[in-house]
Length: 178
Image (tube, rainbow, N blue to C red):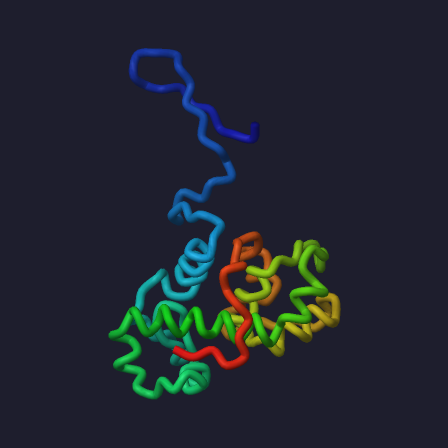
């Protein structure tokens, strides 16, 4: 086992073993949809609903105004004060992205591109970061067409970091609404 062992200081020679692969700075999340959305939210905004970044992206999932307009959300201040609306918007966006990327999901899941095993959840996270069109370009070019946002986050990093979650409960829906 890949672990670090230390001696207990309290009067015995018993050993306590801590796995090296656990990042104790982030909460443990299951590999289901709730774990997926919470892990992504933590990366985007530390899970805070009222965050607006320096580029104007909003809320727990850092939505752009154009994306919000797609769901008929125009009052950004009301959006920032409404956690339920933010959660619904995230699910709706996942549904739309899954529909847009449905063929690429079928073709790409299970492949390895640039050393990264491609999963459906990784694809959906990358689409959240860069838009579905950029993910299509990346996948169809076998990783030669890349994208990074203004802060340096890349499609590759999202494919890797958010891979392996079960997002099968999200149904592809071209016309998803809130």
